[in-house]
Length: 65
Picture (cartoon, rainbow, N blue to C red):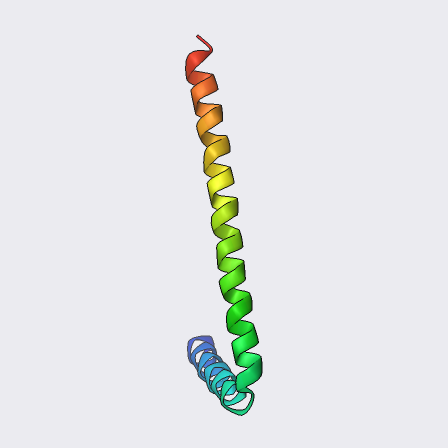
């Protein structure tokens, strides 16, 4: 079997497995969804801090003469 088809089959099996777990354990799915939302907000904060640091670095470099 070619690795291309093997990868596609693995993705399909993983998707079906995830859907079955969500179907049989909806409470765990809600906890997972809440964790993902919290992580998404956390990464937005990290991105804002990184952009602020980059802006300070650029302004210092530009004004150093």
